[in-house]
View 1 (cartoon, rainbow, N blue to C red):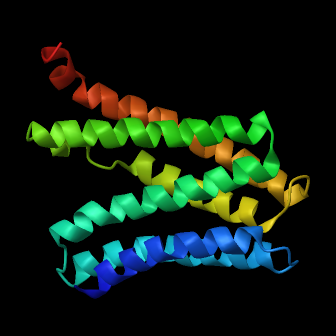
View 2 (cartoon, rainbow, N blue to C red; view 1 turned 60 degrees about the vertical axis):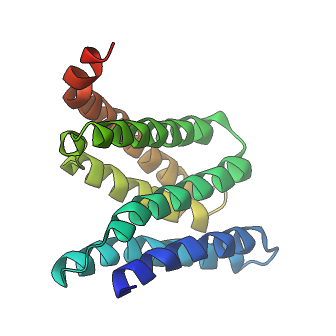
Length: 182
């Protein structure tokens, strides 16, 4: 166990706390839930940075880091779908969740074929993740109808568009391997 792996495990431990904070009936609960999400987002960046910098990458960390990220994002999106209760937020949220499922399955399949590098994370994926985290932070902090919540939804749509673009790139890169197995 090393510090990057501990940070990843902390991100997973934050998930039930995020849910509890989200549902607390106090005026301070939304900003605190958003702050917790921001802390989790920072640990996402920090654990990868430290693992590379200190040469502490492990198979456990390589497996758990993307799982922690996807769990945190999916839970936050599910909470926000309920809070906003509108197709305007549900549509990009489902696009993002659906893409994560498709790309996770694709990466697993490509890894089984020894071609995992074919679907490595691209700069578009990193930009998508950044926009997604910013959107979720805003949406967790502000209630539906607030001007900044509208900005959060706009940023979430930008993240969803990049999600589709990056998924198309991953599928295009994997297509020669996928089409041979048909």
